[in-house]
Amino acid sequence: MGNAIACFYCMEQQPQSGQQKSRVKTFVIVSLSAAVLLSIGCYLYFRIQSRPTPVTSQSVLSVIHLEPFVVNLADNGEPAYLRIGIDIGTARHASEGNPATPTSMAVIRDTVLEVLTAHKSDGLSTPDGKKVLKEVVLQRLQARAPELNAREVYFTEFLIQK
Image (cartoon, rainbow, N blue to C red; front, top):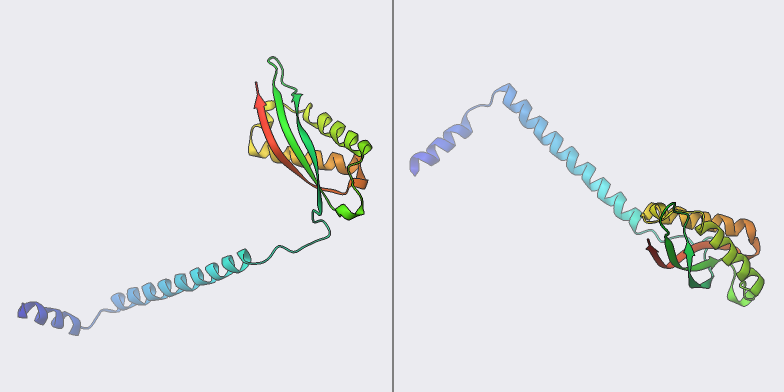
């Protein structure tokens, strides 16, 4: 055991070559650089994650609820049906009066039916298909019924049957 300590001591005392010193320096520099970059990345990630969502004029202040209904989809060959429940988020306060008058409800349902019946079940069964459908419904509602101030479309039920 005494020999092992003596050998370790002898190895420690031997001068390192220039190549070994440069490898050690390179390793230390790369390690410190990686640690600094990782620290900065973590700081920025958590700082961005902790920011509160700003309240804008586009915020949803009330919701119009549509009862679930069934529509035929535009599939060729075999029939396909969609049972869907939809809520429409609006930028109107409930105190400003109900934005869902009988006339506006008819326009909303007609617009939603028009959009839904133009789609095929394969396109709607993916998450991206649902996202696109929400965007199209919202755009059509904003064009046909601007007085609603529609800001969001929420699916409360979504079932495709072939």
